[in-house]
Image 1 (cartoon, helix red, strand yellow):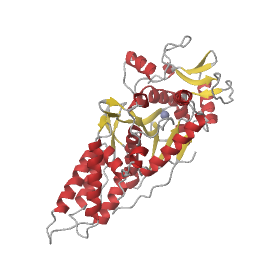
Image 2: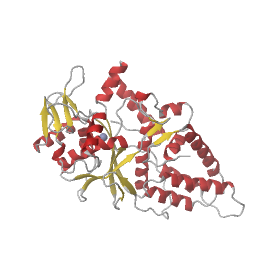
Image 3: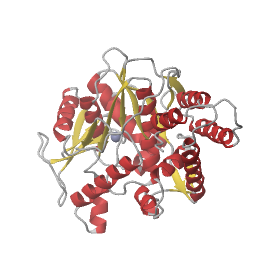
Length: 416
Ligand code: ZN
């Protein structure tokens, strides 16, 4: 599937020092420092295309864009794969409810998403893979799971046995009771009769009347969501043959940690015979007026709507990055107002021939990002530099506005 337009990464001077990147890992519940290597692999779960792109989505993809940018700025290759779940229950249910064709809905939302990512200056993945195009890979993965005797049938639907992975539960660190509750809330079917364990994950759903299906050795049907990402990641990312993990970073919004990533990691561990991701990393949820943003609550703030209202995508980017990525947080118009103000101030100051020294602020942005993407610290430094430049006395030491502009673009994705 086509992704979106490539983003140019301007170079900055080699005198800046890049500390190794440390990121919060949910599995170990600690901040983990990535080892220094020539290349890294990152899988970020994409959208199910029925309500793209609200600010929660945008915050997630901007978070992992910062990871991509930091590692790229270090001169490393980042192998980045993202999926789009272009067939799944929520999409089919939404299309049915709204009386629209599910494929039309998916195509329109994927187009919107691509446009929003491009406007927000997000580096596209090398491989942007739809569930439908990945069906042959998913079928292969299920066959491999079958050959390891970890799949069984309930009336023709196939389930993965979670207890086949002795590490099941160690990425999300939830009690079994909590897992059962969340599983039921997030599309799981713990109470289905015939399952060996209520938490076992659907990998293939036999065709239901009125629903789309694809042929397979298990009968016509469609894939489960968790096996989709697992099969795509393992096929499209170069798997690390040296480390004890297959990939470096598994990312997404925090609502994906369980069950989605726990199931994916368990299946991957059976398929790859070693641990899946070095770091399981999550962006917090964005809420509005004290509630989680969701279409069912009718409180979605869409990126495209804000842009159509005349807001600069770079201001949206700053507004979402101004707070710590991992925190659940509320969206307020004041965030966008402050971000717009900062963007205009930067544009004005960076057009001056003489500005306050810039080396320290660029290094501070780098240091802040290296420390689990501490964007509030980076923006505090930028605000301070703006103050220093505003009151710059004649004859005082000066910096390079061009270099700071390139650093803002390269590291934070803020193109001015
Ligand atoms: Zn996924």
